[in-house]
Amino acid sequence: MVEVSTSILSIDKEKAVRTFYDLEVAKTDYFHIDVMDGKFVEKNTRKQMKEYALEIKHISNLPLDVHLMVEDIKKNIEDYIPLEPDRITFHIETIKSKEEALEIINLLRENNIKIGIAVNPETDIKEMYDLLEYAHMALVMTVVPGKGGQKLIPETIKKVEVLKEYINLHDLDIDIEVDGGINEETAELAKDAGANILVAGTYITSSDNFKERIEKLK
Image (cartoon, rainbow, N blue to C red; front, side, top):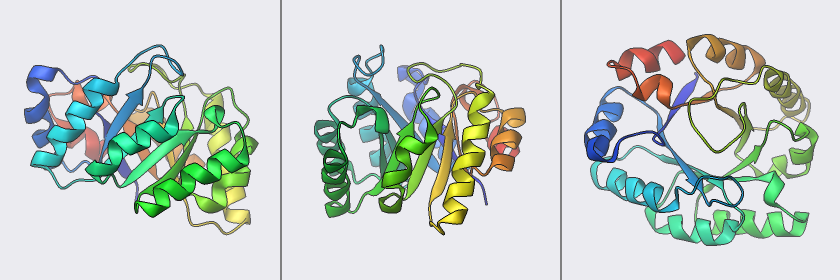
């Protein structure tokens, strides 16, 4: 069964709490928290995303799917540990060594947080292979990270296919999440390639009917 993780990046602050409630009623599976530091990507959303995540924890039991687009991974993990997220994903591009990656993985494990590893569109999918045995999820960015509303880069679908083949070949129990430019047409491409968690933001939140959009993705 395909799951939907709704990105809350583009939600208006004034409507945030009501929107979170409506998304839960519409049966999103996760709230996708896009944490950006203004360094790894241009935009800085750390303060806003932390506020939104806190508000969600007050009104909802749905899991937080935290996506760290940051250089200082450990500090940002520590910011979210008290919120007990279901999973935290970090980018392979910010890792300088396997030892550093294993330290981060152990920090997540010690706090009962599932481990996600992300790869940007321009990065070879093979860069994450060494760490997949420790992960619960691999995230393939299907747009350049940093802003919402972009169109999916077609070449990234091939990366999902290659990743799925590797996972099957090595008998790994791991989710594949895709993030960027997801709508009802591109969702089909991603699912056919092997993705089982779809991140969608404006496609859902710009609609008058969240439930209908989420059902179409599923």
